[in-house]
Figure 1: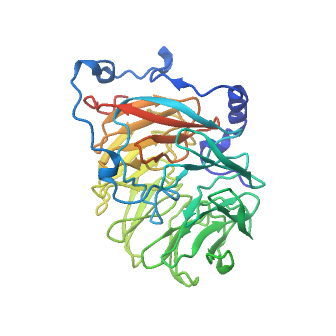
Figure 2: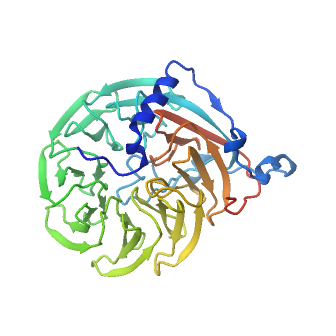
Figure 3: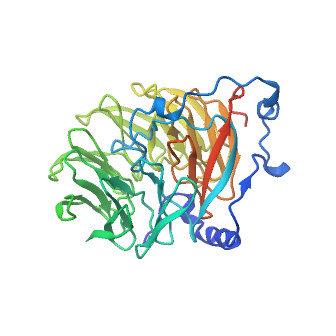
Length: 428
């Protein structure tokens, strides 16, 4: 099997060592600063007590504009928006759960706040918001993909070359479908209820019953999760350097050459445009017709998916040599802001995907420097929380405003914050 893109997959041995060291520990709370070498040197945070806190945000239920994130990057359009408020400042990170291998996938959240968490030990668990184990099943091989919650069950793929439906109440397997290679992408639900997922070099459309409806074979491996528009059009990239659009029946709508591997999940904008990143360090925008809108160089691999800010900004996580977050105008591609977690470094380390966007436009993401970051909607840093492993999986918010982050060391962190001090600009 090929090595998966991203720093998480290149350091499985380190994750195993971290998990072994963590075995047997009780849940713990991590301080928001580390040793002098790794301290967050932010005067605004150190002097936060000198500022009177602003009024607290409204309760989460007041601002809910949709369901919790029940699939990879929130919805079938992969916009990575949450209906909830995230932590605002001075956070603590509590270890909620420890798997025996890395957590590479974004957890999915049920209506009541329970979480479905997959890991590279091949397990899928259901946890309460406080970390109590509801059930656990093993699916035979590593799980790189986020589950999709639909109705009374979840659908998930694994490196056992299977797509599996699991009943939410007790973890019982309802059906499974053998597929062409590792099912490393996250499933999405089409408007007609069909499940769309890529495995190996094939794109699958699966009926809700688990039977195969459509299969489309591409030339190379598909690492990026497919996105689906309101009309059922499927968008997916592959390592043959192309972006594709298909109907649910498998008819090709268009194919576009992008010049480098397309391991990034496409993002569908509010007005119908398609955005995608490549290993060539570019973000592309296309009209729904397939016509090119823009092509922008952001300076590093763009692999883990893009995000859509509340103002329509297209936000990319970027790898080295200048890893960080870059926000682009959705019409012109002009840079709106950039936040760099460091200057210089290897090309294979960075930020694996665009940030989670909360109900007020704040941005949350993990990075390969063992931190979880929060920015305001203009790219100013609110906080950075140290954890004990790289965070390459997308983050997710629960109904109570708790931020959940899965890490390379197999730990799932619950991050909660206090009132908001004045933000700082980049603060490198």
